[in-house]
Length: 128
Image (cartoon, rainbow, N blue to C red; front, side, top):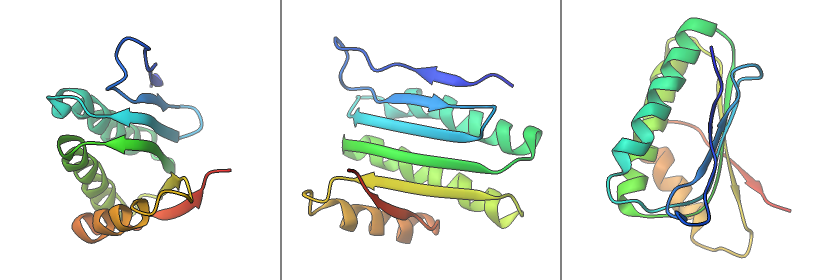
């Protein structure tokens, strides 16, 4: 299986960078996410995650390092988290970390909402 890498471009700051490493099983979504049709961006990520878990049968860690996301993106983030929860319930080893700036007071509430909505545990990690 191939890794999935999407670099954030300076002329398109609405898309986060993505580094889904097929060798290590460590995946990262970082930056800003506020595109119009978020499903077009996030659907391939969800499909990659499913394929990795079902074919590779190895643990997966997803690290979110998003500093901003719009409502459309947050809906797809919940979809990713729900997918991970279902895979975890099927016995797969899944871990989700959310890295945040301790000076941003809203992030903890957002992550708590994601946990409630998706049923997936998310570990909060301070950026240093």
